[in-house]
Image (cartoon, rainbow, N blue to C red; front, top):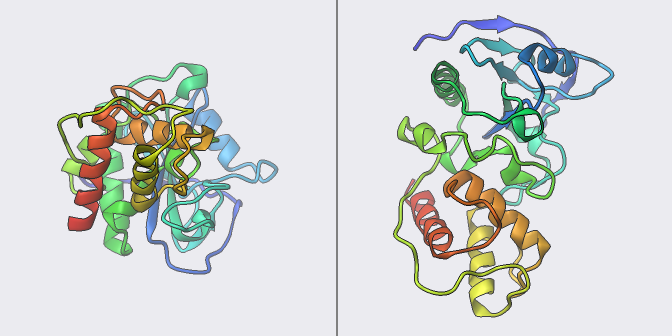
Length: 243
């Protein structure tokens, strides 16, 4: 697929301190793509992204990849706490959970896949650093959400995906404690989440599990680490190590 990128410059950017090695996927979370573009280009809003992908597959370029756009905010992934500085932000037009979350159209996902390939052709972005906004900020964000086809993206060669049969054992939920919780937190931390092992299944752990589920389970995203969630976590960790 050949992309035609439409210039739509935003004034909301500054200088990078390092080349980008991460791609962060978002949904716009606004009623229309036009509203999202207007906000991302509004100097008073002080938010932006490098790209906006419309539902019909049109791609808008707002900030040059060599510059830092303001899309990620406070968060962490694989120890990196200034994610704006090292990432390319892709806003995908969708009303989001607030305004009527819905599946992403085929033309839009095809454009996202093509755009991701072009970005990776210019920068070294490992599969384990192609993430969602909720992955780096589980307590604040849900996007791009449980309907975003991460498996499709991975099958096209971008990002991680792994299948696994459910692991034995009772589900782990907020309030649980012990070795199983410690191992769960250690696995989430190894993958990239900010979830320091303590053995206590606290609110932060629940939010991180929800973010993991929205990306790699998607049939449940309640923050309860059932056997499928735990098995998928180990499988994705193995896939990351093999990538």
